[in-house]
Length: 155
Length: 155
DNA sequence: GAATAATGTATTGTGCACAACCTAATCGAG
DNA sequence: CTCGATTAGGTTGTGCACAATACATTATTC
Image 1 (cartoon, chains in turn cyan, brown, blue, orange):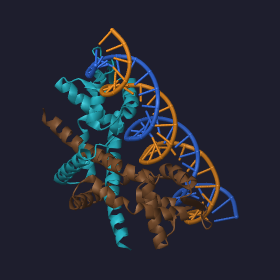
Image 2 (cartoon, chains in turn green, purple, orange, blue):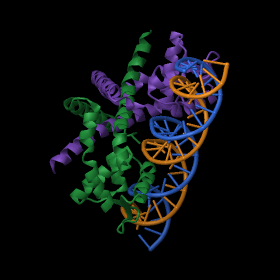
Image 3 (cartoon, chains in turn cyan, orange, brown, yellow):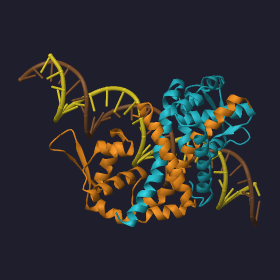
Image 4 (spheres, chains in turn cyan, blue, yellow, brown):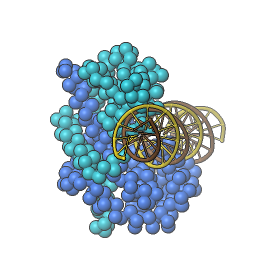
């Protein structure tokens, strides 16, 4: 195997590890979230809305996008599905009619209680030591910050 | 903020970090792979086929699935697209007609030369120190192994 | 050796991601 | 005030992921 092949293989292993680990982790979430009838991205949106409700913050579509790194092409249909299920309400802002705000409905807020047990159950399911997961999280956040700070070509 | 909120938030940050970092990394790949007209999953398939060609191995669809953790619902259409572009040839095995083997065509093998520069360019693009990336890779592989070893519900 | 099970791939349907483009609303320079 | 630029969100189209199902082929069991 040539030197170039080594480099290519190494690179592949790193980025593939990220790709595979991400899917393995969401696969762990899936059975827990299926109990709530949510997908993982929907769960992330609900987490933001629950947090905002607790802090009395107003969330707009663009705010969700910045927080979750998703654009309107992903969020608009996702939010419509959550709205059809009665978990969320979308509303055009009156001050600025370009803006759409998103809030959890009573049903959406109630779901938070159902979701409380998820983190602990997930942690048990993974079988990985919590301190290692925290170290991994810190490293991922650091790399993410690097990736997002350089070359604003992110989107 | 209650204790439960802390746990939930922490967990959210960990798995979200994996989710966001994965997408940020593939976003870094995108401009490089667009030069080849490949998506990231297609690139992964070609890597496996290039490796197999060098080792004179025979790759079947199920082998690609095990390697990349993808099922036929993902691979079959992906491979058909690669076949339409003339990069790959799919062929029913004669010994066992349930099996479909996949090989890179001459064009597919030639693309390997174009792909050689990708890893280094990607590394430069990220702006993260290589030793940190290697440490992250090792940690991810370890966690992935844990996730896949417990509860064979992975797929 | 025929019924049954297991295997390997394909198909269908849903829901992200993301690029490219569109429209309406607001802002700003003159 | 008006026109051009910007902003916020929506739409369309492509390509994964993945569950569920279907189907043909091979292996097994009696």
